[in-house]
Amino acid sequence: MSHAAPRWLAGTFLFMFAALAAICLWLPVNGLIELIGSIEQGGPKIVFDKGVFYLFGAGLALLALLPDGISNVLFRKRIGGRISKWVMRSAAAGIVLMIVVPHIVHWSLSRSIVDRRYSVCEADSSQWLFVRTIVYAQPGHCGVD
Image (cartoon, rainbow, N blue to C red; front, side, top):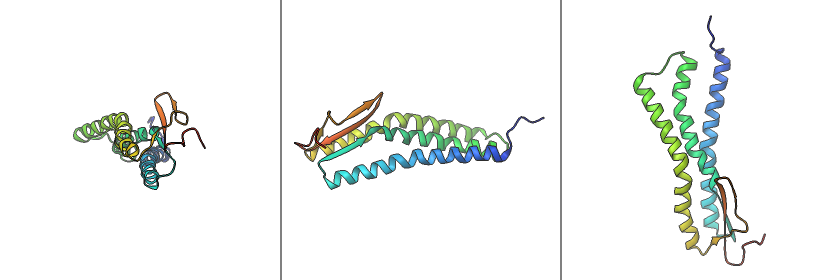
């Protein structure tokens, strides 16, 4: 007797897994595009949501696990040794990027923002655990809505 889930259920789970990976990749890319747009527009405040960039590495890690899931769900076979090593290395790289990418984006864009005469507005910025939303404001606009 097989204990495997029905293929339609496993396929649905695989589709949801792929959709989650796509969302995790799309949100930080969209956030970066919006952030660069707000820097270029030069309004009184620029909001940098550092937390959304943690999703990029998570999305890559999830995406790297998809070949294994597809092989198991659709073909009911384990993936081979070379592909398995690639999947594990790619997933590990995604986890590393999950930690590194937010800091790289913050470091690289904060220079551009500060060069445009903005400074960090602690009154409007917030933090929850390690997820930080940093508000940069032009002189005279910190703490003012």
